[in-house]
Image (cartoon, rainbow, N blue to C red; front, side):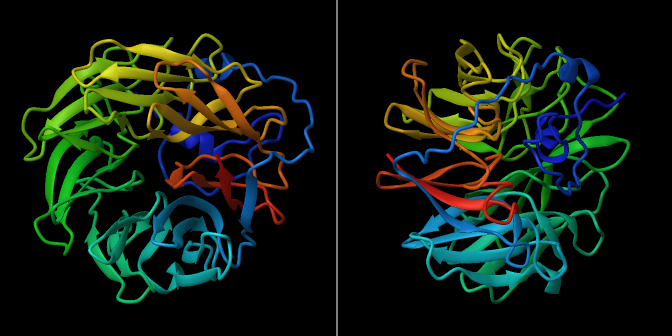
Length: 403
């Protein structure tokens, strides 16, 4: 029997308090009844006073995008992708100034084989790369690239839905001229894969497949990968000895797949990319469930899989269901909670890498955005991020926060 990740739960389900809007999702995840039953919804207290330092830069209107998926900062320009919206409601790519000016649709994906991008754009060699969860020549998604102005669309690789994988949803990693990534589905035999492919589309290799028939390795590697010391590290959102996902490593040639940590029910299910410390000895991450209050936690763990430490347990008033990878700057981690906070629409937070000094920086109130699922970026002392919903038109926002 397949179990699946909480990641897509955050995207596809409507919470009882109405904080999440329905989203078109093409992944394979849902939560177990036990997971959903263990979560209690806090009673929100309305907040209408804007947070000093917070600025909403752009509200999407569906025509110019819907459900944005992270931002990429290049020079003085913000680039991003939306999962939906545009002329065919299959997503767009956009650029804008760092102050929110000069918003421009650089590519409407309805004119391409790429449909429903699910991650932030990756910049390499003057091009933007991303994954689409469906579309391509076979309908199973793929990897694509475009120039910074949206021209020269290239269908880098199309997944075939077999052992090589399907429906990539995690962010991409590039090293040299090689892209590494994960797919979170394929068919009834395989529940995800790890792959690499050249930035020019050559040299595709399936590094590891996760069989649905055995949960030992874990399955559904929804998040992206981290490369350090010659190994790729990542997480699965399900499977493993404890059934709640695993932390793994594998060499870049596909050999030596090793499970280095199995998440327990108390720890929760990993729901975002790992974040590596400056000394490359510690990973920081989030679990979208689990913790003492069953609404998520922030953790650290050694790269060898030892020393799992819960740094912060969310309570509801400070956020619940953290979403998006943690951003590390000095000795501080920054992140977002998808829901909860004072209004139930999510929060922006910081916490020291040792778990002290947790601070809620901002409560989203709806008009300034809601449900910040994607990862943050930083330029100088300003954080940039997106919300999946909310804003003036309820289709999501781009925002900044001055630290």
